[in-house]
Each structure stands twice: as C-alpha cells, then as structure tokens.
Amino acid sequence: RKEVEQDPGPFNVPEGATVAFNCTYSNSASQSFFWYRQDCRKEPKLLMSVYSSGNEDGRFTAQLNRASQYISLLIRDSKLSDSATYLCGSSASKIIFGSGTRLSIRP
Amino acid sequence: EPEVTQTPSHQVTQMGQEVILRCVPISNHLYFYWYRQILGQKVEFLVSFYNNEISEKSEIFDDQFSVERPDGSNFTLKIRSTKLEDSAMYFCASSETGDYTDTQYFGPGTRLTVL
Image 1 (cartoon, helix red, strand yellow):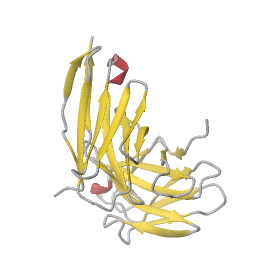
Image 2 (cartoon, rainbow over the protein chains, first blue to last red):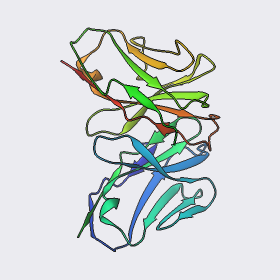
Image 3 (spheres, chains in turn green, cyan):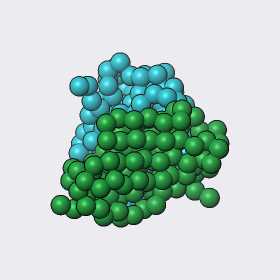
Image 4 (tube, chains in turn yellow, purple):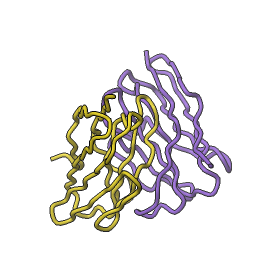
C-alpha cells in the first residue's frame, strides 16, 4: 500500500464550483499533514498545514481524520487561477507526497 | 519574502558525468532537504541535512549521491556518475526548525537531463 494516496483526477469543474479532494495515508506515526499546490513544471508551494482536526483559510478548508487516516481539501467558489495539481503530504520528519490531484477550472 | 534559490535552472549532461546542483536555503533555516520529481511522477524525498550531517536518507539516495554544505550559504547535491534514470526535477527545500509541524519551503528546482 502506498504511504500517501490521492485520486489523480483530473477534476474538471466550472468556475464558482466547490470541489473536494481526499487523501489517505498509511503511516499512523505521521504527525502533520500538508496540502501543497504545484503548477506545471514549478515547485510545490504550501497551501495549508493540518495538525489537528482542521484548518480554514479563505476559500480553502482542510480536514484531518486520524481515525480513518485521511485528509481532505475543500475549495469553495473556485477560480480559474486554482487550476493546478494539488499534492497531499504527510510528515513525521520528511514529507511523503501523494502523486497529486489535477484540477482544471473552466470558465 | 525570503526564498530558496537553486542553480542552474536546467542542467544537461552526458551519462556517466558528475553533476553538482546548488541551492541557497533561506538564511535563518537550519534544516535542508533534497527531493526529486521524475516527469509525470510524484515528488520523492531524497535526503535531509542538519548540523553538517545527513539526518535521513531514502533508498534512492545511494552511493552515487552526496550532499554538502561547503560554506555558510550553499547546500549542494552531487551525483557522481549520472544515469539516464537520474533525469528529473530536483528540488531543494529548507525549514527553520525541522519540527514535524514546520513548513518546508521549496526552491524553483533544477531540471536535470541526462543524455
């Protein structure tokens, strides 16, 4: 079983829609979790960190469920600029990334 | 805003040649990392470095790889004898404390092409 698994997508949604991604992790020792955004051929950029049950930042909400070992990311009122690949990561020291979920927002 | 920088942005080399990829971490950060991303695949951890020592390394980081902090600002990744399968994007990252809650900031990457 992969350490961090994500639905690769692509998700293709209209502007203004709400979209949710899930990510599961297998290492119960993981202490913290991250959502990074990666644009094509660019570096990962931190979107949100999740340590306790959840975190909200504007249109973005991340939830953590330790019992079920999954993390979710909710994007509300999606914008064209949200089009990117979203990487889920778990960390006990190094970050273990999932393969990423591609999101495409259409006008 | 402080950022991690990497040079070169693109390196092309012949198989069997040595390459050195350079990174300048954020100045007050103490923990440094290298990750790689083969085209179309996920970002993979290679190695972490603290206090002039390797803290942790992955199975990918074999004897062909080495890291060094030659001075107070640079952090380098050396591949001694490159293979075709080393072609990838190499990202340097740094964090302030290395704590599991600490954010790792990534540099823009060096695209390595091995011919």
